[in-house]
Image 1 (cartoon, rainbow, N blue to C red):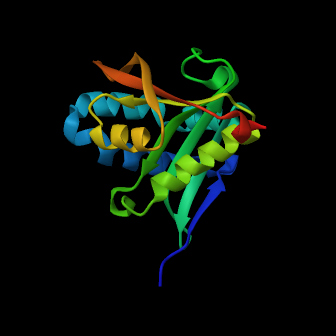
Image 2: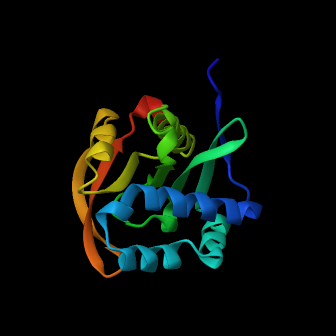
Length: 179
């Protein structure tokens, strides 16, 4: 029997769970490609309780957990308006994070999160869906291209003291999708 995957909005009271899943998924994804000191500096800055709470309380950001049998297996972060990490596209929705625990990757959770982002973008009548993805994250680049996003720019992403580059990708939303 297949386990049902539930995608649900994260409550502001779930700071600790989001912190735990955020640290674990980011570490699983990138620790082997970066120095321990850069990882520690980034995680301490981005995944402390005050930072997470401020992001959860931002009215222009939405967070979602994916759960299987009540176990959180990943999360999605969306931004619009001034919460977006770049202000290059008018009337757009940003996927800032799609992170899934390593042991649950390959179960279409990323696709469910992407579909949720499209649903939210369409509900908000956004003209574009966009994101930034690390230039060395080949799997994510392929996934987003398969889903219709195309590169349009890049920006700097600091991981500790390491200057890295994210490829910015966007997808125009069709008029019939947003009407």
